Image (cartoon, rainbow, N blue to C red; front, side, top):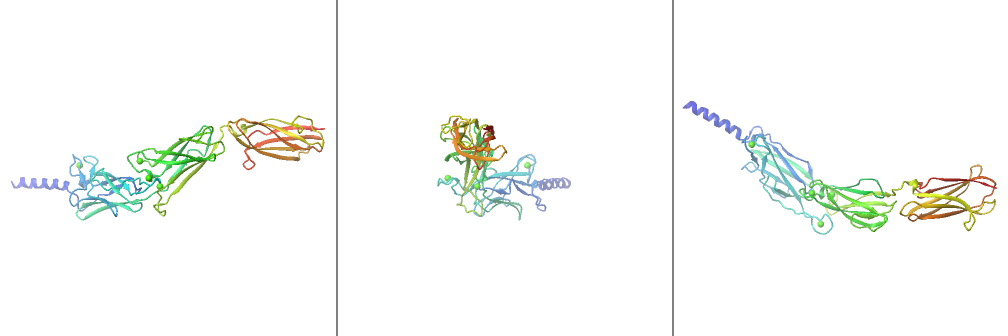
Length: 392
Ligand SMILES: [Ca+2]
Ligand SMILES: [Ca+2]
Ligand SMILES: [Ca+2]
Ligand SMILES: [Ca+2]
């Protein structure tokens, strides 16, 4: 009988040893999926506590037992007790999550707060916790009597970023705009949206487009716009012509310290819209000839003023500014005349441009004509046109 009792008490002790924590080896590290969170993030919490795996064949939980509570708290608000549950019957790993609910703040300038701050929930996944812009959150677990393990994370806002998918767009392209601002992932369990202003040099008022979060919890927002040269801006379609700069602006109302909570910042990116016609094919020089003051072709004579007439044509369906340059070289190759005309061709327009010149010597002259987009940028819009002429 004594032997039986001894065996029984040994069994009880053995079972007992498996069911209670190891007070002398308090190994129960607390992990979170990030170290810094934004105000409306979701936090995943993991506690590795093999000694709390009381039942190897069932899901255990921690955090709510008397004297061994888990608390998740800021300086002002606290969730306690908060239950975490075992990932598998015999894992000894306990997890849960909470969603941060920020504080009352208007993020889109409509004078209404866009958050719903609240502190409620008992775990393992239904917790909500109010937080301020800066500061921290601590998770604590009284692993054993008098042994409290803690893990702290930071809260911060972020400066948004804005990106165009291309630095230059050509007519016919669509443009993808991406905004990254984790602070605008206001609900980590639903798709959020933000507004982006898009404008061009030709339509400075521009359009206001919705950028949609790519996933419930991404904080990455995307909008696609197109360009029109024939109608006014509307919806996601922006009026813009070649050579316009294209601007996209996101107003970030959630800025980190040292900005104040009420500060805002325009985050802008600039791209350019170009013609789909390659630069050298945008304008054609159809002909260059000498003419009298009435525009009638003539043979040039020494010491008489003539017109050097160039016929040019816009090959595009929209206006094209140009600098038209004529350079005349004498038989020695010296430049004896250099002149230019600045103007703009409308869609498909043909134009005769004339510049006067008085030849002063006999010989073989060369007339060179070329067209740039402007005297400043000097992008050639046409191949050079060269004409030789012998003046008698
Ligand atoms: Ca278990
Ligand atoms: Ca608002
Ligand atoms: Ca979201
Ligand atoms: Ca922000």
